[in-house]
Image (tube, rainbow, N blue to C red; front, side):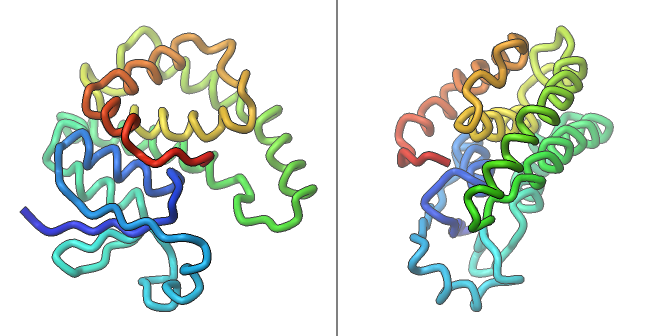
Length: 199
């Protein structure tokens, strides 16, 4: 088994999907959390100056979704067939496209608040309708068992609910999917012991 070290801020953010996969697959790793004060010094030493970074026996991998695909490769979390794997990737990329539209690093609070409000009020309902239609009456987004697309939905929606608590009030199926992910023993255990952070 390789030696894994994950470096990310002390928050869920883009690092959490990696932590969920490690938890579910019961893989030991070092969860190295840095504070904002350490970031400027560390930034120049990293590939492309971004985190999360996963070191695998000392080799630094970057981009959270690429890391997630690497960790889930050859596991059922990626999808059980090549078609399912494509479907999983499509759901993840759809969610990530939306999450990437938020100005997370915007320093002007009024600008940030305005864009967040517009996205959550006008754009999010369309995405949620599409996701609800895609899920249909299935238990999971893809296939007949959990995949990391379900994990990513739970993670992204948890973040969005911080900013709009009633976001899913009209989406009981998507809420039920969140509940199913959170009830998985390995995920429930991780959620109970992880540091409590807003995002």
